[in-house]
Amino acid sequence: QSFNNFILRIGINHGPIIAGVIGARKPHYDIWGNTVNVSSRMESTGQAGRIQVVEETKNVLECFGYRFEKRGLIKVKGKGELMTYFMEYIP
Image 1 (cartoon, rainbow, N blue to C red):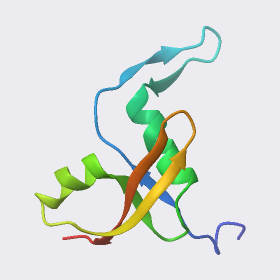
Image 2 (cartoon, rainbow, N blue to C red):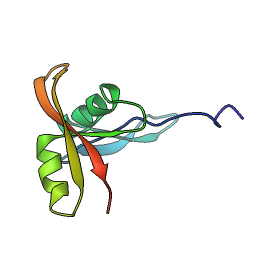
Image 3 (cartoon, rainbow, N blue to C red):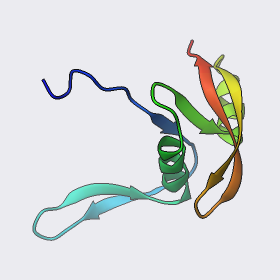
Image 4 (cartoon, rainbow, N blue to C red):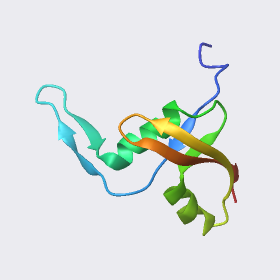
């Protein structure tokens, strides 16, 4: 019942990543890279119930019919200010 009332906050990014299995006693799969870091920042600076992306990702997704609302410049740790958008329409 503890999971009945929650609202997701989602960040999406695209680009190259590095993936692998780490750990000798309890191995697990993980991913690293700038793409992952920006996606994480989009989630952490986003709003509940919304999907936030950077401009480059918005441009790619628009080609597939997705629509966006401009949020504006957001200060992102390690990146400075990034133009961000909220996804408005999912085809």
